[in-house]
Image 1 (cartoon, rainbow, N blue to C red):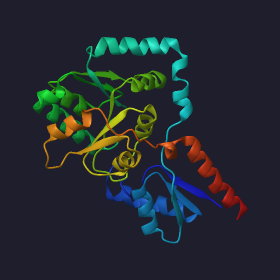
Image 2 (image 1 turned 90 degrees about the vertical axis):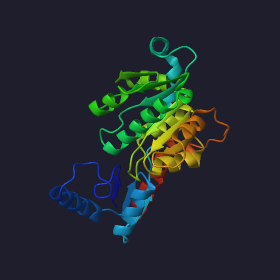
Image 3 (image 1 turned 30 degrees about the vertical axis):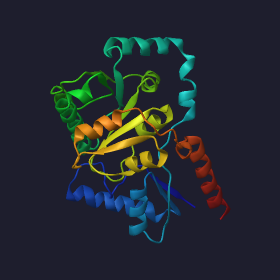
Image 4 (image 1 turned 30 degrees about the horizontal axis):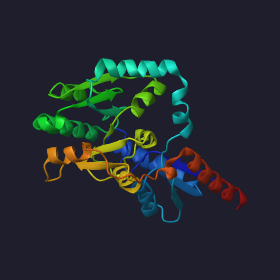
Amino acid sequence: GCLQDFRDGLVFEPLGKPGGLREWMRKLIERRVVATANLITSVSHPLVHDFQQRYPDKVTAMLPNGYDPTDFASLGKDAADDTRAAAILARHVPAGALLIGHFGRIGASDGSASKSLDYLVDTLNESAEVAADKHVMFVGELTKSELASLERARFSFSVLGQLERTLALRLMKRCDKLLLLTGSRASCATGKLFEYLATGADIVCISGVRNEATAILAETGAGQTLLTGQEVSGGDALRKALSPSTDAHRDIAAYSKVVQAEKLGRWLSKMVQT
């Protein structure tokens, strides 16, 4: 038996450049890959549903992205990195400010996610009350257009650029809120979401549509979603999302890579036995 896993869609919501020839090639490659598969797995419900609709004779299952518990278990063991993280925060974050952290890229792969950054900037600019005593910290590579959007910001923020993974995780653990910016893709659930889940911090997702990431936040009780096209006041919605969380329930076990490895092992064992 053969298992074929798709971490992103080749045909459904592809991340590659558009164009008739490229679309034809993606469809051809996907058909040839799927033809050999006894089991097709993918990372989100929309992707799995798409495979089910287009390949009804194939067995499909979901294997989401996840977090590695060992990444977080080892964070307190390096005093030097802890000191570096504390020094970075002391340098960039005003004393007493609520720290909102965004980690990784925004729209480098999916340009529609950059519109959610524009929404954040506009909303905080228009609501001085919401922006007061808040600091937004961006860790990771931003595009030129995203940096230009931040030049309009009239609130406290910092852009740290790319950092070593262990240092970034330490900073992530120290944030009061974690910011997730997604766009118009229904299947979107990037790897950073699962690292966010593992920190235990509240997550605020700003998105163009309800998608896999917003569904996971609702399922786990780990955060709130703001839709950029919603009719309610953006300032009111953001104020609520940045308030202290009252939901103590958080069930993220299904997104541990240990649990996922066990599930994958059972699938492979079954395929070998049959």
